[in-house]
Amino acid sequence: ACVCEKNKRVTDCKQVNGVCQCTAIGSDVPVFCNTLTSKCLLMKAEMTHSKSGRREKPKDAFEDTDGLYDPECENSGAFKAKQCNGTSTCWCVNTAGVRRTDKHDSDLKCNQLVRTMWIIIEMKHAERSNPLNTQSLEKFFRETIASRYLLKERYITKVLYEPPFITIDLKQNSSEKTAGDVDIADVAYYFEKDVKGDSIFQGNVLNLSIDNENLNLEKTVVYYVDEIAPEFSMKSLTPGLIAVIVVIIVATVAAIVVLVLTRRRKGKYVKAEVICLFMVLCVGR
Image (cartoon, rainbow, N blue to C red; front, side, top):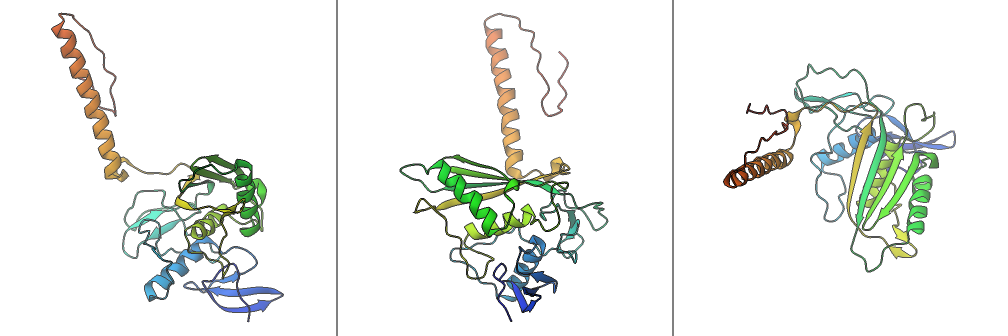
């Protein structure tokens, strides 16, 4: 028997040719513990734990109902391009397993698994009396991502500090990734779990410390950019975004009305041309 240091959501571990090999929980796919496990298999294992009530949850944890689902994985550990929720509702995903289309019925066709080529990790640290040292911060994150998550440094394209925000760019397109390279989607998933206190590593908590000062993060958000643009329709806009659009339209119309009335009161004739917004046809003058 052996211990899988890079994945605690496994079972039946044994040494094979000097490498600890285990079985992923929920999928029975073999994983090698000398590298990262794919995000798809990790999500599958997490959902299996959640359903059985065995998953260990960190203090103050709450469920991310939008991001976590029970995925279908290839034997390689990759996400299947088409995912469904156990009923007739289906959607297409990218290599990070993130939905990139509207939700449809089971007749939906997902012709290919589109690669996520750029991942942006944005963090906001707690209020501080003085900002962190920029060089120390960049050095810490570059070295941590390279050593802890085994990502080659050439894929870490930027570490930007704009207090209180820290932004990390990971870029890896299809032509750059070679056999044996870890995927940036897997790295981002491991990293996000680490900073949110739900580490996938076996008894190896990430120490967020820069120049011997603990770094307290208030928020972490991950953004995805694919090699092919996502296929969302206007129907998929959130109510909040729709409300913002409506407010902008109403405010613009109100401003035009006030301007016209004000100039008319001054006895001036104004010929106004209003550029149509959001494909709304202007009424002829």
